[in-house]
Image 1 (cartoon, rainbow, N blue to C red):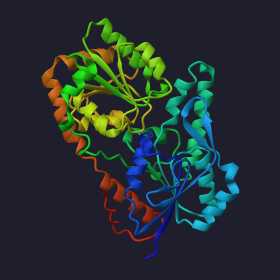
Image 2 (cartoon, rainbow, N blue to C red; image 1 turned 45 degrees about the horizontal axis):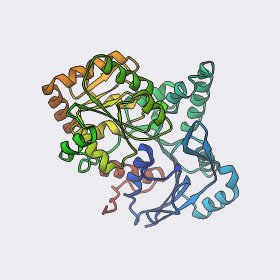
Image 3 (cartoon, helix red, strand yellow; image 1 turned 30 degrees about the horizontal axis):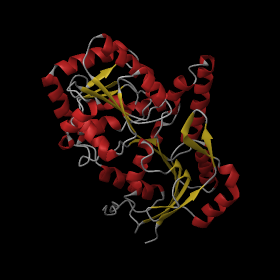
Image 4 (spheres, helix red, strand yellow; image 1 turned 180 degrees about the vertical axis):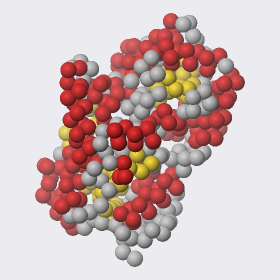
Length: 394
């Protein structure tokens, strides 16, 4: 049987860079080598990815977020086209609608190749944060992004979207609904588990017995950090005894340390250590509304950690209000503070949220999601619809 050839375009292919790359690698690690051949095109990444060639292109560091690189395919257009023509792909996977994505979709359309994409990043929600000092530009910038995303995604044959709320938002800006398919995210319930709880470690980290409120995320402004600061201040003003534990790093870390001087900052942590923090904290706080999915919320739930999150973005779909967690009005600091106070004072409610969250998290499985992805690749190329066997994972 002829192998299906997939060319996979992504700006960054570093496994632990962020939630989007972790999602991509969940698929990459499960590629059935007997049935598929992949070629990876990226700006930042290794020379090979799980045994497949990876071609790196010139990049530009973004001034508003130095942790990200924009790929400049025009600087290597000739060699890139030669590489693609030599590989002769059957289907094109595009991670994001940036310059690299625009090059990829144009190449695909010129050669009548099917295109699949995963909606990883809700860029529209970033504008309010990055243009807050130039509010007169916000509407213009949003209109440009919406126009660009509509044009890009309406050229894709299949778009994986992680939540119903995201499908609604994308339909509202003119992305054709028939192209979109609900494709959530998996959770490693062996890694994220209440069994990882380590009270002694947490006591050493905090130096006291006060309850621990955990925020785990990249420290960038689009994570609604101003609201996080307000919640910290509000709890302090109310005389609540608590530890604010911040797991993550980013361009806004210094501002976070200045605004929350008593908070405990771990810096960036790997998933093994993050699983211990989840299981050992008392509440997970997540005010971000910029998520398409928000991997950290189901990870916290799988760890038995009660969640108080924003009623916005894709993350809100995880929470049934008052049943397995609390959703709060996204920018209403008093709403978060009152719900955190209520939860911290009610042990039975904590136990309810924890138990319901664990049960809910068990419905997310990566193997099933990966099988669906590889089957969709075959369908896009008109090949067999039989289930694709997953590569064994060591």
